[in-house]
Amino acid sequence: MDPTAYFKIGYGLYVVTSSRDGRDNGMICNAVMQVTADPPRMVVAINKANFTHSTLLATGVMNVCALAESAPFALFERFGFQSGRTRDKFAGIGFGRGENGLPVLKEHCCAVFELRIEDYRDLGTHGLFTCAVTAAKTLSDAPAMSYAYYHANVKPKPKASAPTAPGAPAKWVCKICGYVYDPAENDGVAFEDLPADWLCPWCKHPKSDFEKMQG
Ligand code: FE
Image (cartoon, rainbow, N blue to C red):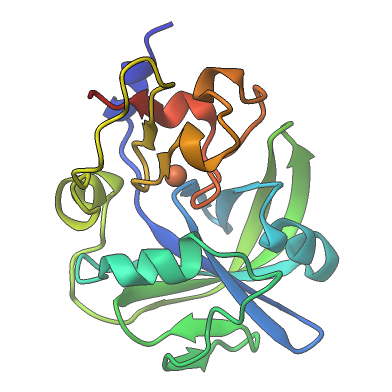
């Protein structure tokens, strides 16, 4: 298995919004795809560790906001690197509502799809939602952001950090979001000794998306 083969699959980047008991939430997602046109259907895969996963199972509806290339890294920090369990991710930003009442981003969003969940499949780490599209709208002519564009132009370049002392366990950096795992800040636990199901605290990606930092 060559893990780099997956880099050849094209993805977009989206904010999946949901709402439960008057509480709005949103999360960054790349696993979104239209699969049929008549009737229109999309599939969305959501990591079970995300608060959104349980909300979707409970409510059966979501909105998918397609991000434009203008979306700044701050938007990814807001929706991707904190949890809706403890934060109101919509605090302080402008947003509207779709016909289904769920949030729709006003800025840096070029299209929105309102989805009604028709089927759910447990995929282990993730849940796969097959959905009917109940509304679709283009919001701007701006090009949609691809995952490749995010990696090349939006994600901050790795910052120079203090060199690791000779003999000390290495720091590892998340290739997705730039989070640095430093054993010195984690009771000296080496990255290699973290459990196999450990997830990046910012973006919830697995250990396999980390690489060892040199020096
Ligand atoms: Fe990460």
